Image (cartoon, rainbow, N blue to C red; front, side, top):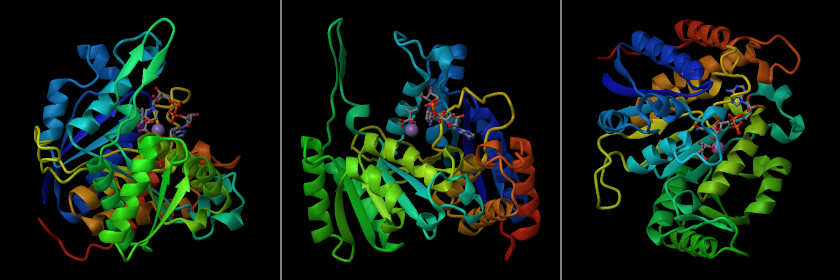
Length: 374
Ligand code: NAD
Ligand code: IPM
Ligand code: MN
């Protein structure tokens, strides 16, 4: 098949891990006879430096027109002055919103081989396989903000429609898994959470009687995630809770550098009756940030970005065999002890390039090409 993929490397280690994911996509294209046209554009701090804005118009236009977007990370100390009016992170929030990508899927499945990198006891990690579905275009991230010399405010708003569509996505995903959804909120304090809980309860009853729905308060959820991670299947939650809980969940796998994500909308359909988000079906990025402390050293863990490329193939291009090929290559590299510094636990640390080379090698030998397609 032919696909147009927009690549947004961004800042810090973003370009380093994105380069790894691009090499992997190209290797998969060669092996399975696809043509991926890659179009690189600016976002974040790099875009501010070049154009004065974190999401230039041509970047957004290219993303709308693409089949999928692959992103590295944005941000860094250069653009983090507390009084700055333009910030790299605004570019990321703006592209998610403009493309209507309301559901952010963040899977965590600790790999046996890397379990030594996790601070959690190994017997708690066996069999852990969870999927956080984070609401991505609403809540406190997008509410009105005020700031005066004496005070500041951030408004958190959710509409019924915003809650419905992300809970529906989580329930549909749970149907293909173990049929269990845990909805996380702070309904003992927040009105948005009480609405969230009401909507989720009604939907499970009326639309998804086959799904088991539990509710959990976010503070105790932060504890349960570490003390009994096996108890969870799909976790659905609002924007900020999902951001925080998934960085925590990454410690089950051993590092922030291991986790991929897929941000999905309604596949290019109009989502809110206003401007169409275009034909793009998803944006794919590791969950970590630009890691300024290790940027430029060639030691960043590229597995999260590489696994994001696998999600891109599965969710935006419908290439599940090719996605599985990447995931198997990553499994095999980890089994063979190909660890970057963050997961090496004192053992030999492989560079970003060496990890990437190990994955590429395994794509050539491990993956079965059952049919050649064009
Ligand atoms: P971070 O995720 O960048 O880094 C946290 C820690 O994890 C650091 O010690 C870092 O070295 C380590 N780490 C992260 N990814 C790694 C990888 N692939 N390999 C090895 N180690 C890795 O979070 P932070 O330090 O809080 O934020 C730094 C900047 O990144 C901020 O400007 C923030 O806004 C931005 N950020 C961007 C994104 C994104 O673009 N999606 C996500 C999170 C943070
Ligand atoms: C993430 C990041 C972003 C978020 C920031 C950089 C805006 O932390 O993708 O997890 O909070 O969504
Ligand atoms: Mn985050």
